[in-house]
Length: 230
Image (cartoon, rainbow, N blue to C red; front, side, top):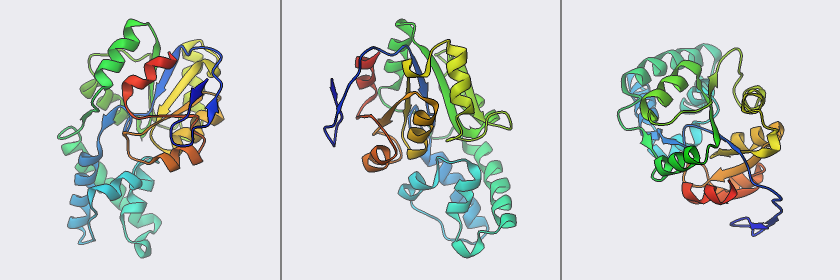
């Protein structure tokens, strides 16, 4: 029996897990400053109000179109305006995506230990596919992930489960033997719909209430806590 932090609900866990699907932004990597700087540069360019860093923790997580929509004033959220902001912020982000983004404290040690235990690992992100692959390759170069998936025509953005189910198939594991670790309600919804075990990362962009209200079975405060379930 494992106690769920915050609510102290008892969760029955009859067996260990043999694979982990990681969200990227807010779970493996702290990317929020580069994302915020990129969007604020675009907003300044367009003479629109900029936002503090904390606001961006709510804006991100559901794909670039939602990111753009949330960042601009409500009265400007037309299809054409959003498309233009997406184009501009994509250009800005390519200039600065790796300036401040880094793995969270404890993530390198977690990945090292998972590799030593021969646990299968994958990344499933709502970042566009090319940027997901680039980010993992450049900012997490020392670890081999069995699968890396970003948003594309083949893999729609989460909570669509196409990517998670593809990963389970590539792992050769039934979904209930896989942990899904993420930091947003969207991640928890994806985990549940795909049949994996949803664990919320409290060091990420969203709070405990969002994670639990969207189905998190467990919450962990630091990466090393994941190891007790592997």
